[in-house]
Length: 221
Image (spheres, helix red, strand yellow):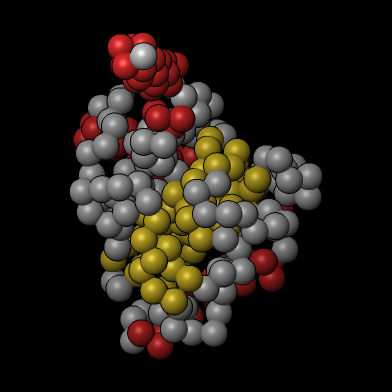
């Protein structure tokens, strides 16, 4: 009886070990749970014309989430001091690198807010060039390809003027109570937006190579 029980337990352990190996080999749950949203999510073969975006902050929220570079999780940086909310889903473009050593920021125009760390198929229609604390900054403005109300937009000039004013006023106002200054310089079109994405893709490849994995160790600021 004892010998039979010992054999059964050993067989069970061996079975569990084989199942774990199979998950790792097949790219199952064990591998997926370790994916880093900046380095392991592909930008997409059609970038910079269309690509994937990772959402950090849902439209209508006032919690400032930041990508924690070491873990790939979202860090709650702060609750916005001003009585404003994000006017669009806000996040970043995977496998890109800006001049500030962060992935390129993106605003995704669509009807609904989506959960943090959602992946969206997007098209860049323009870019907002700005100064944040005196430093140059860029926000790529995109539309969600799977939202029928926005998917046909191809140029920022097709948006209502009030929509652009909303974006401008949010970024110029949201840090005022923190005694920080943000100044929007201008809105640029899809050609400039695609070029900015292309440049950031090249900077990323130079820094991390084609397959980066987990390499960054700091939270975005």
